[in-house]
Figure 1 (cartoon, rainbow, N blue to C red):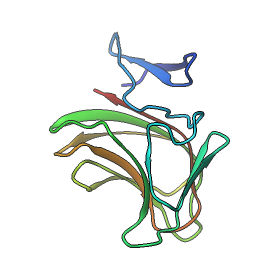
Figure 2: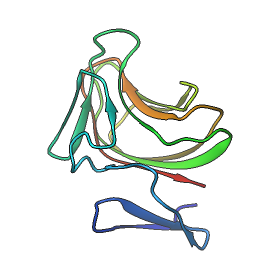
Figure 3: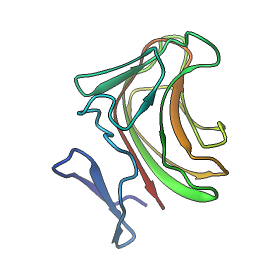
Length: 140
């Protein structure tokens, strides 16, 4: 359970829970350093602290991603969503490309998942208009 959050000097958030502090796995989660740390599709724009994902040029989708996951490990995720596509959604995928969370509205999204296998944590969209301003991923 997440009890509180505080921003530190590099823009990442430290979340304290269960009496211990956990390390942030995402590099440049607030997009303050452009694309640094992110694998991005050609149709992703990162500027002014926000990532705009989509539209997909080639199926199946446009994406931002980082290779941070371990097999059979559980994670807590917080994503700040500024906008969602009018006729669509965004998806968060685990290392096996399985959708673990669908983004259908704006606001701060907080969820947990267990990665089955693979390294890649990704946020995807078929349509233009998914805008993210911060991403945090920590091991449980």
